Structure formats: structure tokens, C-alpha cells
Amino acid sequence: MTTIKSYLRHLFKNKLYTLVTVIGFA
Image (cartoon, helix red, strand yellow):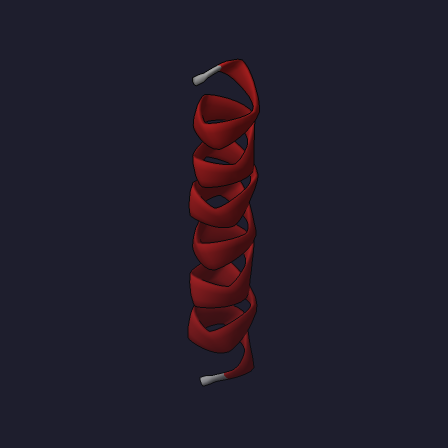
């Protein structure tokens, strides 16, 4: 359970970082 949570959190952080980067370049 903890592994899945940490994985989802990592995935969310990556998506958020990508979104911020795209907005920054756009």
C-alpha cells in the first residue's frame, strides 16, 4: 500500500513538473 502511494505521489510530482515546464516555455 505504501509503495503504491509513494509511486502515485512520484508520478503526480513528475506530471506537475512537466506542466510547469510547458507553461514556462509557452
